Image 1: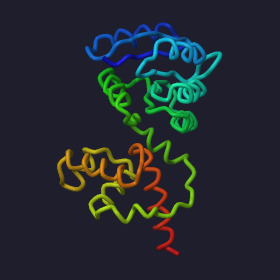
Image 2: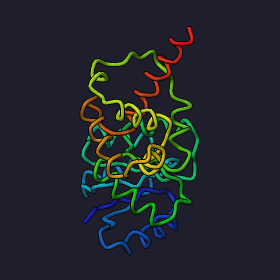
Image 3: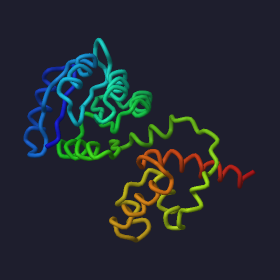
Image 4: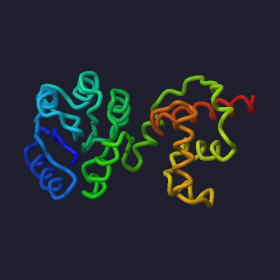
Length: 218
């Protein structure tokens, strides 16, 4: 059973989310909070697995609360759920430890699946949000780490597509391989490069491939 804490300053939103999630046999809503400060207190008290976090709230907003929860309870996963797809919110929330970012118009089944994924340690971004985060992130000068030489040609192809925002199914279709094979390649890439998740892989790969292309043009 995945224990979920709902954080939103609107009671009607909390009630609606509670009803949707309680209908899932593997999800349990263990508490609610109307702002980030209360969310932090409730996290310490209730020890949820996943915090479903709004962004704009009084007293303490969701970005600050995400940072505080990540610092004090790093095992608790934060999934941001908001009406705002502002670039700065996306990048700040992910930088401060959020494992996912969704908009409130996300279908209930996709929301439930996102909770399951972040609970397992995966990163989940709603449609278009990955591109927003990558577009606003600074592009540092990054050279390929020595571990890149350990990647097979196929793993490099998979990594390139990850950097372009492809999901596993799209990668499988593009390379004419099974989706399970893609998952195996992704796991191998993360292990070889000592990365936490595919978001880190995408950021690193985007920087490396970008700088490689710039060097070739020069």
